[in-house]
Image 1 (cartoon, rainbow, N blue to C red):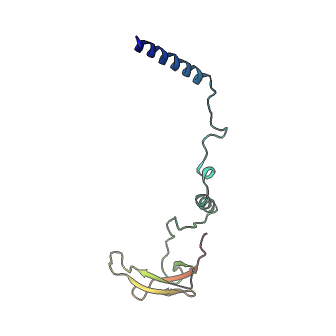
Image 2 (image 1 turned 135 degrees about the horizontal axis):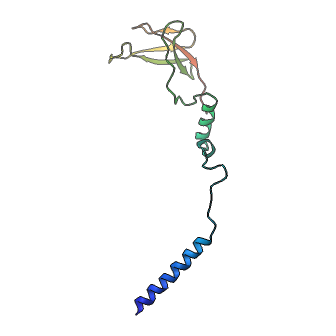
Image 3 (image 1 turned 120 degrees about the vertical axis):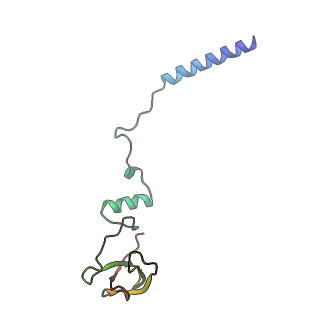
Length: 126
């Protein structure tokens, strides 16, 4: 007997809750719809998205441009100092790396293969 009363009470409660749920207004998304990544981004992510929109690559996210490595079109080496240590894989399947310093100014050659590298001053993005 007590179980029947308990079941009735549960049914009545559920019916009341369903009735209340049906009467409450349903939430709708804004008139614009789902926000984009740019609208939701904050902090560092927002700064990166804004810079990439302007065509910049602040944290070297994108693949670097290919250079021929000649005197007229040297490989670009970004640096915040006036010199940087560079490692050159002279041949594609070579396991030995040739290390040398590149200084700001004229393009410099790899002592082994002759590829040219030029140091370009690069500001930190933040």
